[in-house]
Amino acid sequence: MRKIFLFFGIFCLGTSALAQQGDPDVILFNGKIFTSVVARPYVEALAIRGERIVATGDTKTIQAMAGPKTNAIDLHGGTAIPGINDAHHHFQLGPPEVDVDLQTADPSWAQVKDGIVAAIAKNPPNSLISVTIGLKVFGDTSIDRDALDQIAPHNPVSLGTFTGHGLILNTAGLRFYNISENQPDPMGGRFERDGKGRLTGTLREYAIMNIERAAADRVSDSAAILQLRQQLDEEAKYGVTSIQELSITMAPSRAVSLLKTIPTQIRVRVVRMPGTTPAGRDIEEGKGVPSHPASLITVSGTKWLADGVGIEGTFTPRGEWKLPAKPPFDSLCTDLPLEFPKREYRAMLQESIKNNDQLLLHVSGNLAPATILNTIDDTGGKGVWEGRRLRFEHGDGIFPDQFARIKQDGIIVVQNPLHLAPIFPPGVVAFDKAQPLKSLLAVGIPLALGSDGPTNPYLDIMFATNPGNRPSEAITREQAVIAYTLTSAYAEFQEKEKGTIEPGKLADIAVLSQDIFTVPAEELPKTVSVLTLVGGKVVYRH
Image 1 (cartoon, helix red, strand yellow):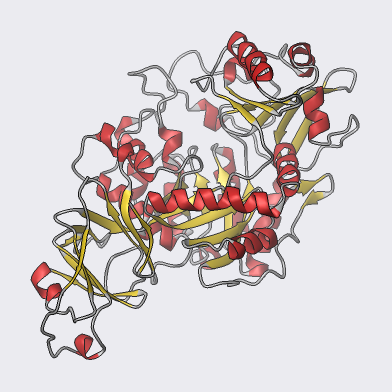
Image 2 (image 1 turned 30 degrees about the vertical axis):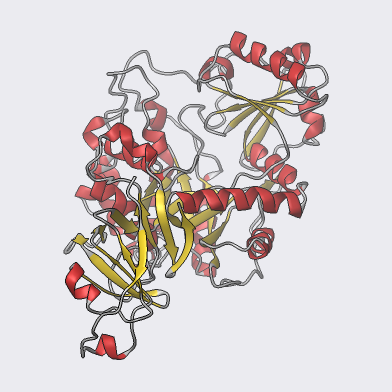
């Protein structure tokens, strides 16, 4: 890891207009600085005054700008990039739980039972036990509320699929989340029942979102601040300077209040992600919250789930949704049902136009983008939608026959490279059309990146440049960084303010522990930031 040496130097000032405005506060020099500007991708040095970059160029030129109070930072050949902008972020906020780590995303029922029993023995009575499961368990309908009650009659137990779109609770778990036996299904969600109408303990889609929001609401503000502060510190450690928080666990008003109290040192865009009731979608959430409640906090945009996920089949009954016998597995996308009645997609688009509010849609299958594209045609087409920057989050089921329409309507695809990690045996090319990356860029569709999971953008860059499920869609590391910086800024209408290292832009910069453009792919996840700047201020130093 390269060390960053800080010192002060006195240099002669030139007579340029820039110099007449005053000396830079900070210069970085002797570096390999990736700018995310295609026309000039690398520079050696940059200068910062206040919160903005005022110059970039070679070391000699930038050093000549320094004055007696300029903080001159020698990068010693180290790599710097624009601050990472996580375009698809979720804060983790909830009650205390015992996370049973079985070291696999698809454990057997025997592994799950052993893990639960061991966790109950080691932890205080009535602890919430949480286990991540895959298709082996979720596809076995004999594993239900009653099966869990036999091994955990007192502790609340939650078996959640690794996608977050399916959940199995025992009886104590139903009580923990205040789910009654006669609980009605919310729109876009389901509490599954047996033939006699009794809850099986299985929850789907918005039923899960609603109960998790309610559980997070029970977390005290003091405890929530501790949880969020830890996550924000983790972001800065990795050189993340902006996050676009798709706010599942908090209403915008609470998110803003907590972020102001902490206070956040990185930029946070709070995107409304409301729940639903049996009567319909909650379209009132977040109304009245200021768009710019603090210098580093904005509130804008609304996200809805257009469909579920290919692994679980949205609302397809457990046991009926199965992997095809052999690859390609594109039918997981082509056959994926919608989340809402079709009328709701028209309503979402109309609400976006009426409120002049960016619309973000979870799109995993192929039917969802087809439905949205047809509805766009019915609500004004390109003339109305081209500049609104509607977003398809994930975009796994976008197929080539839809590319031209997506481009003409100005739609942005926000992909999550963690989803591209191989979930099938080594050497298996899982998809023929699903999970596009390289092909989106090739036709000019804006591609941004977001985590949708653990914080490590360099792990994401590894998967984007080595997508195990479809290797032909690999993009370059430079393209991945641009997607994580400039295009992520574009995805929130902020490309004129941030996302590149060039004069006039906000000085959001990450100096990295290694050269992410040349290290072996398997070394990428080890990358951290040694110096993170937000608006020219140091928010993290290794």
